Length: 106
Image (cartoon, rainbow, N blue to C red; front, side, top):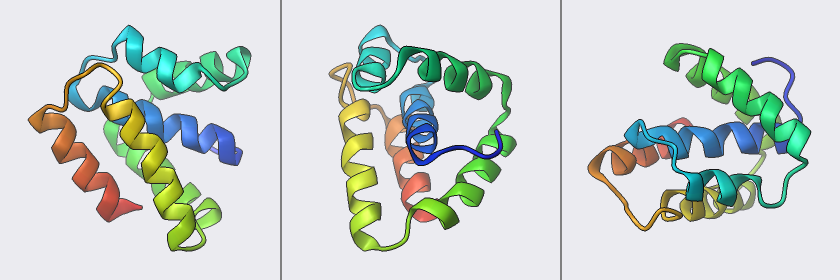
């Protein structure tokens, strides 16, 4: 996806976190969408679903340069992502792997 706002970028990253174990649960979707405009959420979710993993990584790289300016931005971003990882009460090996990859990427 191109030209995401900061909020859209955060939603996109949270969807990657939720999809780490290849199973986005209802709890994870609720955790992501709880404080988001529903129309925006659906649009980003549909775009996320249409993207392959290569496109998803490119999207993160492009927008990271715009929205993650310092360590505080990075920490805040990952705190929000942790909530999604733990939203369904599980933290699988696949999720740990994706979280580690995202830490390196962002």
